[in-house]
Length: 586
Ligand SMILES: *Cc1c(COP(=O)(O)O)cnc(C)c1O
Image (cartoon, rainbow, N blue to C red; front, top):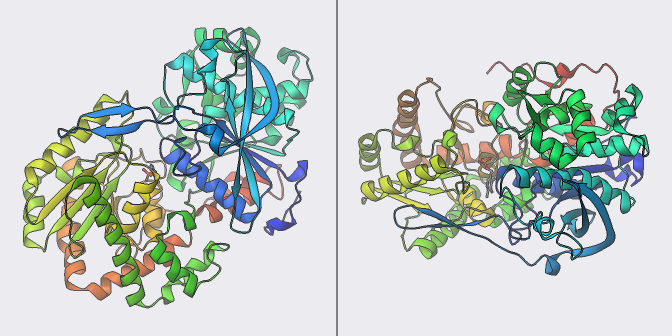
């Protein structure tokens, strides 16, 4: 089947429908149904799907207790508070109740619908699965409460709900799709549900080659994790107990157990027609990790209108009036007068400074160069790389015009090393704060704060340990606001980096001191002299960052690539996977 990119010509019939499954989706700032990058990507993907008029429906869990809110005391000690949200107020209940089996118990579940409206008026339904029903065992009523909470048993039960419950609910709603897209391995069990549908009640053990091929034909899988330990795995005992004998034995026979564990990634790999990583480099890393599978790459993006500050939105509206419908027109930002870039940035920076003052009482200055660093406080993200040589940092700030650094980020409640990183940064901030160096750590990084930070700082710092950053998307949000990146060459930055044009690369010297040295060199020799000494040149860098990276690293371009390469490729048999990747030698 061949489909043009003119999506309005897609009719909403089974042969052109897509079902998108994700454990977390950032739908709106006041709905705490996401934890970080994966959920924001899912939300941005759906926002672009709605803008483009794609016939798509999404499935996730209700997460009634929300992802946690972070509190930090003056020593940087993190405590967590649940964020229950009023689902009944924001979503509409759907009629059907379906029953699935988890751990031998009958679990009833229903869906709540959110209609996500795009810029052209098209809307797509997002179904939130909910097991909080009276007829359920109390143990099962809480299964859709907590995102990434609980133990392995809790997680596997949730994955049964997402994958198998999700397909059963779509069946009950009459939504049959041509493509089922698994955003990460959490939803991998949907493949088993599709096979059960295909078999029409016959046991899984009776599945013939054609049945398996029929399921594969419908499935697309995006992997997001560049380390083996990051992939969801469960013991055989858990698999047999929670999935039941029939499903566990079947998955075992199909080779989805690895190192004695049931591995969700292998389930998804085994039953998908198209598999991809989330940046070119991540595609390579994934092929090395799973050499028996064809793995492609489609680089992530962000939803342009969502992550562009209001001040830049009006500039874009004036110069490229259709940028919301057609993100590629952001390329013409190259023609925006520098003064307009400057005044839009000044407005966004002031909003951030006001927010910092309100949240912390610290008065930052609009004329001082400001670095932003905000992300999940996982150790590989190395929030403290900038503090490797505190004396050099202090000297650099003192001698070159002054420096402000704004941090934010939550550690997963069980991630003690991540929490230690936060304490370390806050401790150093206290020690190093002076007139020329101001460091603040903002509590509770989430959507709104993410938008303020990526919109209002002067440079976006990213210091992950290679090759752990599959893609990263916050630097893309910054780019839409003309904020260049100073980053380790990993994930998307390998593709987005043009030295001195869209930002700067921290050289990878395979040792932390060397990387920190390269980071200081860039600050001392390039960034600060440019910012303070050549403001016009700095504005040109801001502008080329928008034109080159804002126009490409968005979810509209990303979804177009999914449509033509993954969802509806013109030819599905013997399609050489390599064709998708450019010959990138970086
Ligand atoms: C964009 C975003 C992320 C993901 O950013 P990375 O660059 O992938 O770390 C995480 N959390 C929030 C709140 C975001 O807005």
